[in-house]
Image 1: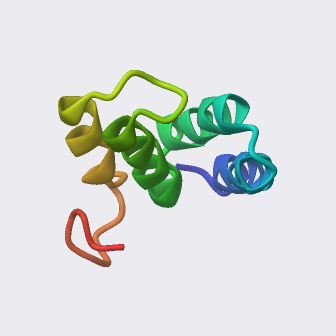
Image 2 (image 1 turned 120 degrees about the vertical axis):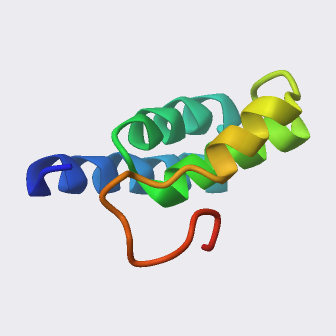
Length: 83
């Protein structure tokens, strides 16, 4: 992921955090997913948590496991799933 896309993903993630804090779960999920798809690991974890509890999406254990254990392929600083 390039530095520019990393910055963009972080901006989207922070907006999702604000929305979630204000109870706007569906829009927060959409933005978490957007950031996660560009490789933001914490956003990916948040997507997984939404699937785990069924917040803004249908509860789905398989999707939850996928997203909560996803890290970008270039992130070798920590093992998969360690947040």
